Image (tube, rainbow, N blue to C red; front, top):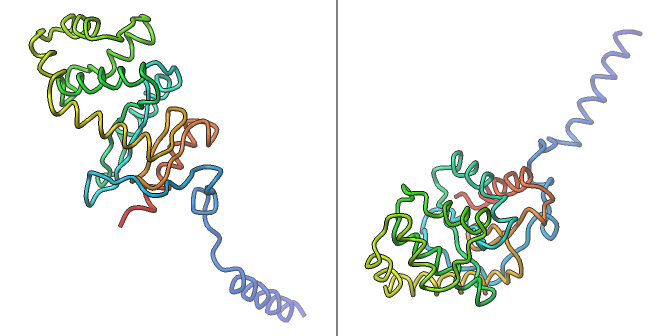
Length: 216
């Protein structure tokens, strides 16, 4: 009887396994839902990094939530896959935000490799020191305090590169239909945010999931 029971139980278990198949592990497709954890962008935003997965953070220097997200973004950058290209894009949702976008891009032109940590210093100045950098005089004074010459700053302000960067910021903001920041965009197709998913740790997981969807 024991052998018959064991054989029958084994047969039942085999049938159950065949019928149910493999259950996805935690973190796979069923864990994250469109409309809850991320949203589609339609039409997609044109990407600039052909053959790569482009990850974009839309932010504003005056946003404390964006400032708070910086360590999480830096954590992502330390472990991002080799096929991922990351970029920050400043939001241009109001005249003040637009000026801060100019501030960001002038900083990029002056510190293209990030070795002088200009981006972080701008964030600290606005969020911690409460500095108002909202006109060209204040902008020039800020960058000359960092050791750049007034000529370097003026050349950046008057450059065609700055105009192209600002046009790109407008395009990303408009096509993503962003109404708040921070916002993370994956390959121009998906958008997600800490407020959408609930916390920054989950944000990293959703980003990883969407990146894998876009990885060829």
